[in-house]
Length: 139
Image: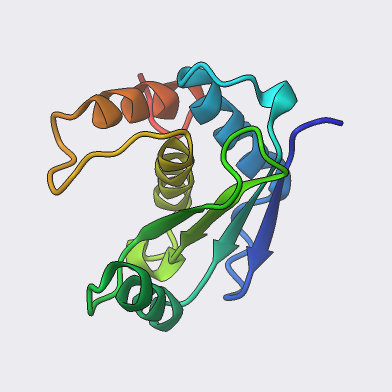
């Protein structure tokens, strides 16, 4: 079975295809040394600011919207790796911004974290590499 990512678009964004989401996640997972041929499913949900606000409050106890959340379910080699939840409106529906958030979420599913400060972390460095490799950002 070939690894793929399902995209659930609850907001009519229409800017992230399952094929592109799969490419982005594969690049992120590969950057972390994961074998995508053994990985389970991933989904990317594109949601409203209200929905991501509710999720942020429920799961992180933060009473505000955010750009992206990742929920690990079975781990990288389980049946369902996890779900990446993105609020396109948070980045004004910018294609590159949404793609960057999908990569960011995939890196979280791959076990990376950045704490309170993202800049200067190993995760930030890996994300920049993946952004360049996938053409989201010029190298």
